[in-house]
Image (cartoon, rainbow, N blue to C red; front, side, top):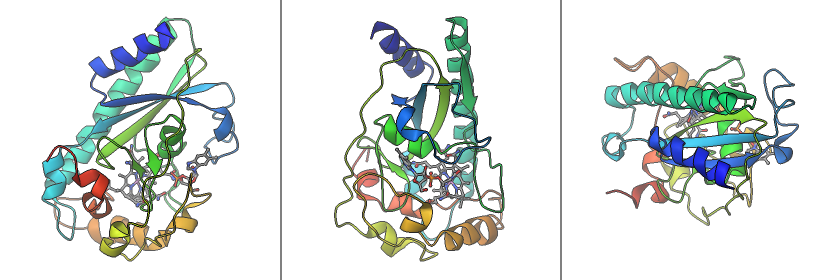
Length: 234
Ligand code: B12
């Protein structure tokens, strides 16, 4: 337990706002690239950085250039912290692999190496909301995530219960009409259960990415309207 707490403490000092440990057993069999990605590992360190609240308050019906810049800065920070965690675990005698924060390996079907949200959910950072995003009790969805796979004997955290209830604000606000509003107790088995996925991808990667000074597939509206995101740090 002391080693786990030491690792968590140092990750906090490096700039993470939330950190949890996932047992990888419940995640075996989820889509990964390559398929064998999880095989050498038993645990994942999942961490989140909180995004500036004010950046979301500026968003009305489209992403802003400031949010586009913050998105890229957050990805760099996450990748730096993940690299340092892997370095520390490796120096302590364990194997560790940082997964890039926002790398897309398949631009037709929009997949990364492994879902950071699925890992974060198992690590107890939050639940998977109707907007398909990870919602944390502390900061709602106003966080970005990263994962470090490892075989270090870290003590795993427990998942949290879904707290979306009957809320449909993300569904009502989505500019692509992409959110179905389906409730889940634990997680959506595939993204089509929660979303008309193509509508979201088309809006973000097409129309929004083409806006002046945006250039990346972002939106932020389902994050801004979520009451779990709004109640904090105002
Ligand atoms: C490709 C991608 C996109 C694509 C496709 C998104 C999508 N819905 O899959 C596009 C460009 C459209 C996109 C849009 C957005 N994205 Co994006 N995206 C990614 C990326 C790079 C890969 C996602 C991926 O591989 N998905 C594959 C699907 C199948 O996985 P999944 O939906 O996460 O989870 C599935 C399974 O894992 C399973 N599952 C979930 N939990 C569990 C638990 C267990 C035990 C099991 C067995 C299974 C299981 O259920 C899900 C359905 O199959 C990730 C980074 C990453 N590597 O995770 C960021 C990421 C998901 N994006 C993120 C964000 C914030 C966004 C946007 C809000 C854009 C923005 N920044 O403004 C929108 C939101 C869209 C939405 N509401 O879903 C964040 C989410 C942060 C959070 N708080 O949840 C991530 C994690 C990036 C990051 N480093 O933080 N994104």
